[in-house]
Length: 115
Length: 115
Image 1 (spheres, one colour):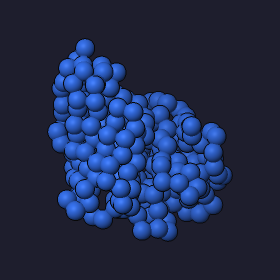
Image 2 (cartoon, helix red, strand yellow):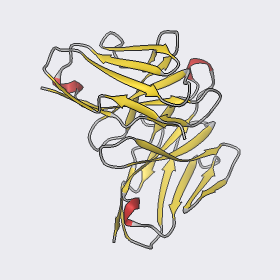
Image 3 (cartoon, rainbow over the protein chains, first blue to last red):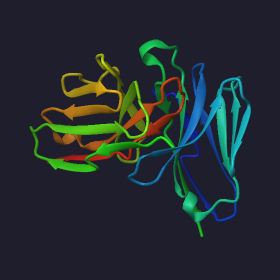
């Protein structure tokens, strides 16, 4: 089964509003990463948060990590129509060796921002 | 930033033929590349980990004789779908990890359609 479960599956908001997406996982992790994917395209790396970090910011993005609850959230502030995309969390739970760097993706949240 | 390219971006082939997809890291060396498959409206599923100079490590349920992976140099990994069938139609995405880095950089993907 997928390591990461995301909610909501779909989110529709107006421009200027904030968008919050959540991700839960099941095993211990080294880090958790958030990616964005526009329809039919590749993934764009947004932010990485390590297991010993609790919060991280990058521009309009804010990511939190609660390892005790095995959950993370991605907040996009002051959303824009161009933020419309699918957002995935991915966990790196690898222990080293040939499995180092393996990512397990959540199901994703489809965000639609209406102008 | 680190750029990963894939070629071709899309391919249509007849059932029973083989298709080769290339993944290149353009401005960095990648000892490890990853191959993912994504079905419509679904998340990414890791197929295999490609290590330069050694055999690929396949995920459970992925047929290594059907999905041949070659990672002959630090900047190129190839995925060959042998004897393709319509159920192999999917979006194939590769990623590359910087040496001693945690972030994975994704290619733009290859859409394979098997008739």
